Each structure stands twice: as structure tokens, then as C-alpha cells.
Image 1 (cartoon, rainbow, N blue to C red):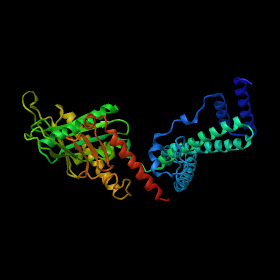
Image 2 (image 1 turned 90 degrees about the vertical axis):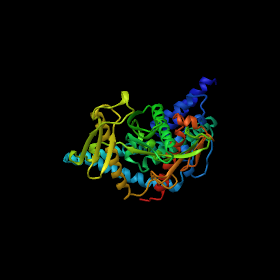
Image 3 (image 1 turned 135 degrees about the vertical axis):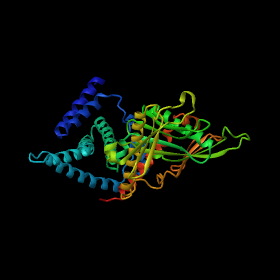
Image 4 (image 1 turned 60 degrees about the horizontal axis):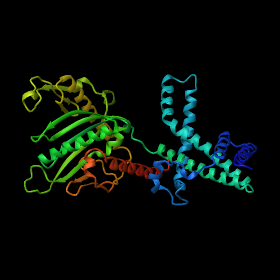
Length: 437
């Protein structure tokens, strides 16, 4: 029998066995695809990056280059309990939505919660289907003991289906982990020179521009809000609004003290100095989020400072906004327009007030991050930039890169951003497994 006839016979045999065993329709379809593919190789299957990164929390059993790691049985049991609760909650909410006599408020509340659960419920449905497929493949494997070709193909398909099932479980695990609702928001970046005088101001400018270049490479919008220059044209302090997909979630761990070790431009003897810059990342908010009232605001205008000449401002375009209940004050003089400076000041003020409310709420909740990531305190030293040695070290995750020039150009910042996000995920899993309810 030629190759064409052989493939036809195997195809027909696969379909017949599947039909007799009443396998799921998509299982039959998969048999057809495999029988058609003469060069099928399940070792070339793409694997999820996230599942590889989560490896440290998986059991070490039965792990090969071709298969994804197994979740521990304890973790699976906890997941199953939570998934069962989610399915019950989903059914309850569906019943409310389908009730003709449900009030508009009940309908809106239930529908909003259903949208949040939708992704997890869809993954559960996908996993149930995959379980049925695996059961069918195991049965097919048992029934094809005397058919070497069929047995081999069924075995390969079972391996692929098992890997798919693990991938779905990993996605489910991520969907169950605690989330910060602010992660999807845009953010406010604030950079301030600390100890080190003019050198600190120059490094603050370097750090600010590093985030600007990084944002551009990510396709994010980087809007400078305000810059206060030093005598050497460094930045005493600077702020910007960064907009894009999940910006705050990506950059939130950049908050803290960034220390620099290098020879300042003002140093004549070539000695290395140590200076520091503080970085603050705030989630953006609007007046609705913080319930900002006009009567709570005191707005003053004044002439902005400058270098003189064409930069001299002869109008009261600078704006100072004070939130009377908290005493928070924001000054913006970056634009020539008073109206634009006021809009930027209000944006920055809303972010600061929103962060105060978040901090108050977080104080009453269990912590998501452990000391491995850091306390999140803005006074905490998080990273050291050593220019003579060409290295940058993040002290929270213990990672060092020797590409300091690339980092300052915004090229390699993902080295730290991804590591910190991974550590957050690890800590969330640890918190998840310690919570039985």
C-alpha cells in the first residue's frame, strides 16, 4: 500500500474508532489533522512563556523538554475549590440577569461581575473539553494495542493534549491570582534629585530621559508635565504622564531610590561620587475617582521662572493648586498657557489623592508583595547604577546587568521590569496557596 493509500487507511480507521467510541466531535477533527500530517512532531509545539517562568512553584515530577511542568497536587486542589466557587457564582449571577423582574441596579451589578468572571469561566469550559478529549485518547490508546501506527499517533496526540491541558491550567492559575485594579491605568512619573547636589540633578535628568526613551520604544505616550532645572541644566525635579496599555502595572515597581556611582562632570580629581534620585510611579486618576470638588481647591497663578531672554514669562501662566482638606500642593509651569498648566496640575493632584486612598485601603488588606520585591517605600534603595564598572543591580531581585549604556537608552529596562513582575506573580502564588478559602 502506497503512502497515499496508507494515510487514507489510517484516516478512515481513526474516524471509525472515534465514532464508535462516541468521542467529542473536535477530537475526531484532531485525529483527521494528525493523520494527514506525515511530518507531525509534537516536540515543536509552542509553549507558553508564562508557564516556563512559573517553574519554581511546580513539582519536579515527570518533567521533560517536550512537556510543560506539572502543577503540584496541593495547588491543583486549591484551584479546583476556587474554580467550583466561581462556577457557582457565575450560575447565580446568570440567574439574576435572566430574571425578568430583576431591578436595573441588580442587573447592572450582576452583569458587571459576570464580565469579570467571563475569562475564567471560558478557561474552565475549555479545560473541561480538554479533559474529555484526553479521556477519549486514552480509550483510543487502549483499543489500538495491536495497531502500531494508530497506537503511536494516539500516544503523540495524548502527549499534545496533556500539554494543552497544562497550559490551560496555568492560564487558569494566573486568572485566579489577586490583581491590582490600578494595573491597567496610565501612570504619573515623578523624578526628584536627592543627595549629591548638581550630580544628583544631572542623574535625575538621565533617569527621566531613560523612562522617556523606554516609553517611546513601548509605543506609549510620554507627556512632560513639569521640569525644574538646576544651574547645570539637570533636573531638580520632573514629572510626566505616561499613557498606554497596562502602563502602571509595568512600571509600578520602579518607585524607590535609584543610586548612582560615577565621576561627576564637576569633579576635577576623577573621584567617584555616590548620589541618589527618587522615583515615584502613581496610577493616573480623574476627578471622579477621587471625588474632587471645586470648593476644596485653592488655585493661585504666578509668573513662571526661566533662563531669561526668550524664555522669560511676562504673564501669570504658572499654576499652583492646593487641595485644602489634605494640604497637598502641586505646581506646574511647563506650558506657556495657564489653562494647560492648570489641566496638568489637576491631573497630577488627582493621581496623588488617588494614591493616598489606595494606601489607606491597602493598609487594611493583606499584602500582595513580600519583602522579596520590597516594601514599596519610596525611601527604599532599589537599584544601583555603577558607571565605572558598567553595571546596574536591582537589590530586590538580585539581578545585575552589565549593559548600563543600553539601559540608560531605554533598551534593557525590561530585564528588571519583567523580573519584578515575575516575582510579584511568584509571591501571589505563594499567597494563593496559603489561602484555602
